[in-house]
Every structure is written in structure tokens, then in C-alpha cells.
Length: 378
Image (cartoon, rainbow, N blue to C red; front, side):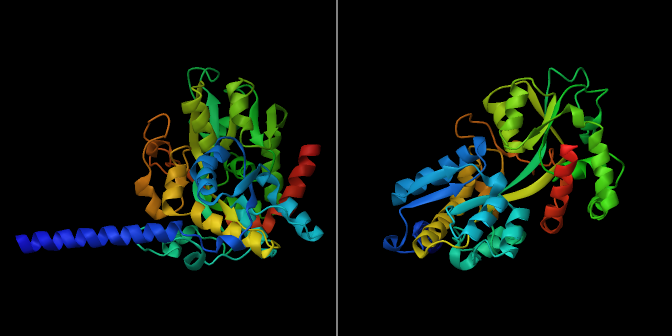
């Protein structure tokens, strides 16, 4: 018994040493501080999401390194602005938060740096390489995903009568649910939902949308509610419109709806049907000086480690992109409620999801964008 007890004690000590060493490796800067810029501009989406990043990543990193972080909420315009910066030879952003399809486009155009997951990113606490820990979510060699989120709908519980909506096509039913809707001012997701509610099978949506006739079909469906739509650009817009009672229902990111429902206690509920799963994460722009690139890479290594991604889930209901982070997700830092049931990946919420096609939108985005904007102007 004593031999076994001694072996168990030795094993526990070894495990503690290994975990401590791994934690030190994660926290250690990848570059000498003297070779890194002492200021950086981080671009994200604003609102509750940027606040979650500030608390989980930015404040701890600034405290640890003394780096000054400037925030910019221009992620919705990231592709166009990075193209313009690159053309002008003046890249002013250091780390940019983008959705996966935009990351693929930026990488294909040479506007984002290649990241080697196992060299540039921290391993999991047990030593699992980052490439395995992120797995299939590494959809581009220039992209480091942070979270799995969904775009879905919220609705005013006091404006939908006795039969709250349970189906995505309620968005197009002005008779049953009269009132304004809010939709994002871009074709992504809107075109897919329109085709689903015009009778296209889920598995055929992108095949149909690849054709001019399919695009016209989606826009014709959107035409049926166009005069009742308030178009939004920032993720914080729909929560505010719902809180003010200006719309009966509206699309936005599930974490923004969590904030207005749970943190602000507004009469709003979630419509999870046909929620669109997507990824959000970091790219490092091409064209940085060596000192700025070193700082950006060091920040990304820190901000995507296992603990940091789990920490973000304390403040917003997005699933961390690392497998090793999931067991560390617990309760909301301020509300004390269990966060797992509020994640888009929770089985009760994911009964009918729509899987976003990154490659499709990377290939078709510019052409469909032009067509969509022309339709809006009509």
C-alpha cells in the first residue's frame, strides 16, 4: 500500500510540474520584449463582444506586458479597409477579428500572414499541439478561430401575441407577426434564410444560390418584407432596437441576444431555429514592421490559449474554439448563471442548425454583394 501511495504521490507531483511548465510556456512571450512594439491597434466588432475580449484578453495582456492597446470597431469593413491600406502601403491595424469567410479571402489575397499553429500558438495545458486542439476549425492557414457563434433571431415576447415564433419563416410572415424586422445589411444569412423559406431544401441552398436565378429567387423572397426591414451594420444594433421596441424581431449574434436577455433583463427571447453556425477569430495583417508583427504574434499566442478562450465564455455565450477550453467553461462572471445552456452548440438550441459555407462566400461574396446592394438601392 505504501509503495502504491508513494507512486501516486510521485505521479501527482510530476503532473503538477508538467502542468506548471505548460502554463509557463503558454504565458511566456514568443519574442523578446525589446523587439516588440509597445502599442497595438486591435480591430473587433464592438458592443458586448468587444467587452468580453477586453476583459478576457486585452486587460490581462496589457497588465502582463505594459502594452498600450487601441481599439477599433471596424471589423464589418475589414476586407475593404485592409485592401485599401495595403494598396496605400500604410497598414495601421495590428490584429483584426474577422469571420472565417473573410479570413479566407484575406489569406487568398495575401493580405493576412500565415500562422503555424504548432509553432506560433500555445499548446493545450496537457501538451496537446494547437493544431489538434483547434482541429477542423482551422479553416485557413492565416486564421486563428476564437469562438463558435451563431447568427439567429431575437423577438419581443410582448409583441408576438399568444403564439411565439418557433420557425425561422416567421420572419417572413407579416400577417402572423406584424411589425418591423431588423436584418444585417449584407447578403450573408439573409439569402440562405430566404431560400429556406421559399421551399429550397437545406442541402440544396448553396447550389441554388450559386446561380443567378437562385440569387434572384432569394431577393424576391426578401422583397416580400423589404419595406418592413431596418437594416443594421453593427452587432449591437438589433439588441438596442429590440430593447427600444422598434422591431418585433431581428437577427444578430447569439451572444448579443444573451446580453439583452440575461444582463439587461429585457422582454426578449431567442428564436434558435435555423441559426447559422460560424467562426470568429484573428488574422494578422500583412505589411507590418518586424516590431509590430512580433507584438501581434505574441498577443495572438496569449489571447488564443486554453484559459483565455475559456475566460471569454464567462462574459458572453459563445463556445470557445479549443477543445481543451470547453471543460473550463463555467458560470457567468457577474450573473453566476451556468453558461452552457446559452451556447449555440447546446443540444436544446441546436435541433435545427444551418451550417455556413465558408468557401462559397469566399468565392461568391463580391459578386453577390454587388447584386444585393443594387437591390437595396431599388
